[in-house]
View 1 (cartoon, helix red, strand yellow):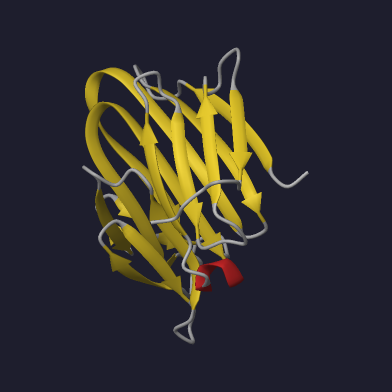
View 2 (cartoon, rainbow, N blue to C red):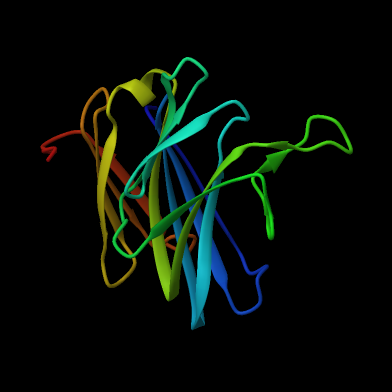
Length: 185
């Protein structure tokens, strides 16, 4: 009754399996868990496009999309940030990235956040806070077990939340969301 969840996978990139789980924790607060697996190392890029009139304020691998009035409108936090690099892009032509188009044949630069890592297997645990939650200082700490089970603590919300996700996009997939006995750092 208090949260919603969906997951899926694809193999659109040769030799890479991508699994994504999206967990709506509460209004304006979403946890996205991506798992990418391959036998060979790849340059994985997780890409988030900000609204066309937003600018980005970046601290490490965390980013805040600021509206034209300078107020936070969206916050993107990485719970598994060790080893990641954040490359902000706006209006690049080689390769083409950081554009949007409202009318066919036109393009307008917009802010894009590219999170890169080179690995065979990688996990992203991304917390996205929008609207009022972007002001609340939402944070995430996460870890992934050897079996791929994600454990994440989300803070700065109506109540601290513990999320456990196992068997992502597989038989026996389970998601547990609880707000009891969770301590925020």
